[in-house]
Image (cartoon, rainbow, N blue to C red; front, side, top):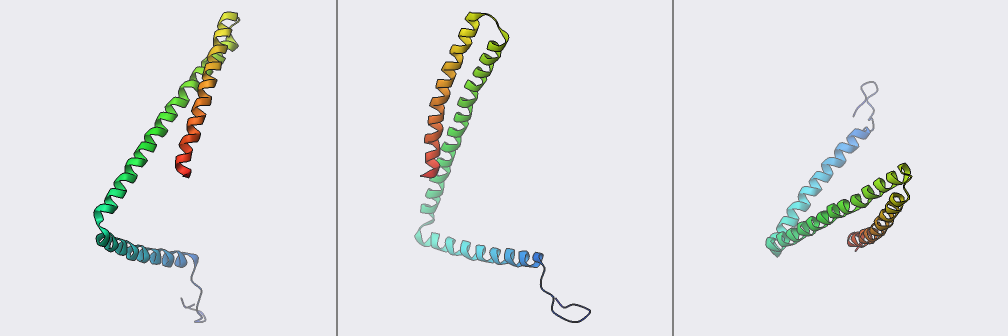
Length: 126
């Protein structure tokens, strides 16, 4: 851009660099996409579609496993909260003992679940 006062070239602002970068990225993306589509046609689009379907199925299985794990983790936490509440509000030794047993069972359950989380996370790390 020329400066009106002295006619000298002014450097482009950061927005101009962003616009140019975005435009360049779009052009490259279109070119690469076209090339990949051509390459896919040469290799067989059905192979790419099969790979995409397999990836979507794998992602759906992982999402279901994550939802199940979320549910499985919430249940013992709720039971432990109730047991702690009972322990802090009662003077009855048998109720306190029962609450303690609930805590022990739920802690064991949480340990099992943390091992499942560890195994689940390995799927993401390869």
